[in-house]
Length: 134
Image (cartoon, rainbow, N blue to C red; front, side, top):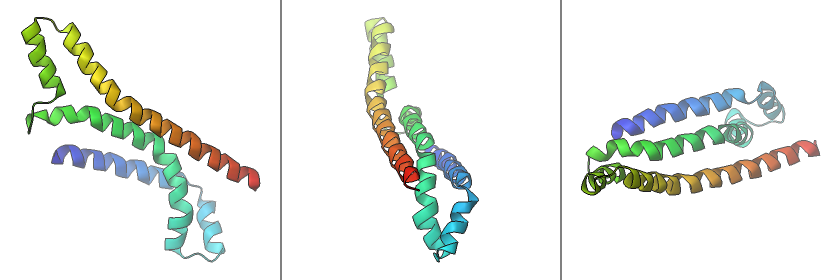
């Protein structure tokens, strides 16, 4: 679990670094010219914009992490894919247990993906609404 956590921590660090780099330099300059300190400019101006940029990649990583967690099943408990293998041997068929396993993974990841999409649309409408006010 530590290896999986460190691996995804590195991916997330790069996602957030890239999203911070994607915020236009003028945003920092504008915040500083308004009298904000560097920490205030980061917290109130840069971070909210970078989180909007990073949201799709972060969502994708969380869904992938959910799926990749089956790789760590050998550490503690028998996990879904292991149970599917056992059922396949007992039934003598791989089709039904594999479809059930895929269905469970779909039921776990689809709501997360839908929720993230709804959040992206909501943040997109907030972002476009604030641009229309300028």
